[in-house]
Every structure is written in structure tokens, then in C-alpha cells.
Length: 451
Ligand code: GLN
Image (tube, rainbow, N blue to C red):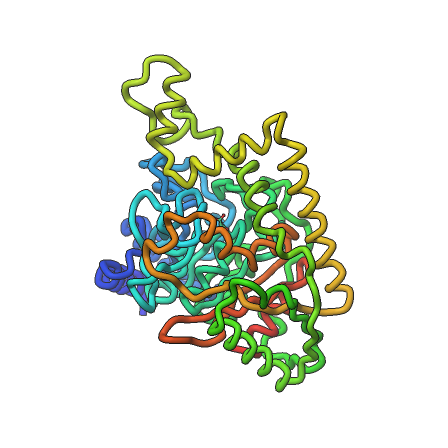
């Protein structure tokens, strides 16, 4: 099998299945076939990613190829550079088959805020795929590609992974360069892999990790081989289960499957103990203030002058800004820009932004304390299973509460992964494994033993 043949087969299959799933905003057929041909020409397949087609979330820059963050304001926008992760994958011979759909600017949990299309859950097309990396997750779960990249600011890799029954890793803040990721909230954003197996996940993380001088928050720490501990026994591993992760809003089905998974870990010799992360409950409120504040500031650059869409009939500068932004941004993005600019305004700063930042510190301290005695923390990824299309779109608060179990991890910059814990009524349930900073290896070890 040549890379070109594999790429052709992949494109054919996507064309057949994507009417149903709608995972891709666009395919990059020509460049994908050229990348595959280059891999064949080189003939060196010692790198596991060489010649393998993948899906890129639509907020990760690909040079010369439309990258729109699923927003109208970036319609037709072609970056003049590659994101660092894009460059790394290209250097490894990867084939970028297309852009995966997502919530507009990664703001959302169902991929329904996309300005372009509605991705469906791979297991049941009446249900949402989760979000914001819903296209990435559905494409992998539906067998369209072996892996995809997503981004996770408050759960956007782990939640859609859980909703589609696959593996999704949000690495430690700083592990993967954010250069070329369209910024949502810079102190929370991380890029990570979505895959069907834990081993594949570790292999992709190997490829995209490492220091980058273009991202001042990327870490200089050495990158280990993330497959190294796969297959090692989890006997004696100290696992903490936070009681707050099993409280209000958690569905019985999710609780049952996750408890069963934890029992299985005990059978394999892990030492499991209940612990408390007392400030968990404040995470959602703090996150939506901090995220919106950083987000409103990051989105100032979309002014109609520098990138993408510009309103046609505006006569002077301020009108260009106003019209362009009114036309270009969707409702969820506008809601957050308003919330963010308000939280940062002189009169509201102390009561909102500052308080939220203080809560963030308390949440970090909660985790630090538990990690003094335990190797890993496990619990559910999401409080519920995938819900129906359209069911929560008009009700942002309910949607925001769905992030309660993933958000604290971003506030603390920790690595965490969602793996499938089983199914109920034909729909998947995710188990979340949270690790110490830069200890993705132990997460993979447990996930692999459990898989
Ligand atoms: N669902 C969360 C939000 O809407 C998380 C998004 C993300 O991680 N990008 O903000």
C-alpha cells in the first residue's frame, strides 16, 4: 500500500460517510495527495506518522490553506505560516487531509456554534458530538482518520472524546507549542491528540511536544517517550477519586460506568482512595470570567483590517470595526466578548476578574495537596452522556455546567485524558484521568492498562 493509495481511499471514504457525520469543514485534497506522494517518494516509513492521513482542527494554522476557526469572520483566511504542530507533523511526513469542524473560536461544547455546519455524534446522528473539537472526535470515532488534533481550553478535547468513545489527551500547559493555534484564552489553551487507541495517542503526542521559541510559555523540559510505560503494571499505583466529581448533575449511568472502571483498577492492584477537591464547585464561574476576559482581548485582532472578513458598506474606521464584527461573529462569541470586556472594565475588575483569579489559585492548591500523596486522579469526564442536537444550544448556562469536571484541569495547567469507560444505551461514557504536571506518562500507563 502506498501513501497515495491510502490517501485516496481515505478521501473516498470521507466523501461517502461525511454526509452523515459532517466532521469536516473542508478537505485539502490536492495538498494531501501531494504530501502523500512526497512520503512515497522519500520511501522512509520508519516514522510512524509518515504517509498517514490526519484531521486538523480548524483553529490550527496551515500555511496557504484556509483556516477559519469555524467563524465567518475568518472566511477564506489563508495563514501565511504553519502552526508549530503543523510543521512538526509535516516534517514527520503526515498527510493533512482536511479541517475538522468545531465550535466557533472553540467557544462551545457541542460544535453547534460553528458558522458552517453541524457535526453529528459518530454513534447516533441525533446526538451532539460534543465540542469544541467535535469534528476531530467524530472523524476519528467514525473511522475517517486514525488521528486528529484538537485544542482544549476548558475540556474541548476530553469532552468530545468522551462523547464519541475515543481517547483524547490535553497535555500539561506548556508541553505543546501554541504557536499558530488561534488563541481563545492563552493561559488555558493546549493542543492535543484524539485517537482510537491509547498507544496511538502517545505516539502523536511524541510528535507534537517540545519547546518552541515562538511560544514563550512552552516548556524546555525534555520530552520523554510517551509509550514507554505502556504495558507496565499499575499495581501499587495510588489513585485518588474526588468526591466532588460524583455530586450534583452527574447522571446515574455515568456514575455507574465510572465506578465500575474504578473497581476494575482495584482488581488490577491499584490503591484507590476517596479525596476532596473542595473548590471544584467554583471552577465553572471562575473559568467563564477568566476565559471570556482573555478571549475578548485575544479577539480584538479581528477588526476587519488585518484578517478575513471586512464589511462592505462601511464608510469610516469605527463603522468598519462595528459592522465587520457584528456580521462576522456568532452569538456565543459575542456573548463572551461582552462578558469579558465587562469583567475587565475598571468598575467590575475587582469583583469579577480578580475574584476569579483568586479562585483559580484555590483550585491549584486543591490539586497540589492531593498530588502530595497520589499519582493520579480519576473520575468522570462529563456529568452526562451526549444530548440531543439543539437541546442545550439556547441554554448557555446548562451547557457551561457540562464543563464542570474538565475546567479545573485547565485552570491548574495539568495534563488529563479521557478514555472510554463503556456504553449505555448505545452511547459512550468517558473516564477522566488527571496527572501531575508533565506526567503524561503515568496517565497513559493507567489508560493503557484499563483499555
Ligand atoms: N466548552 C468550553 C467552553 O465553551 C470549553 C471550550 C474549549 O475547551 N475550547 O468554553
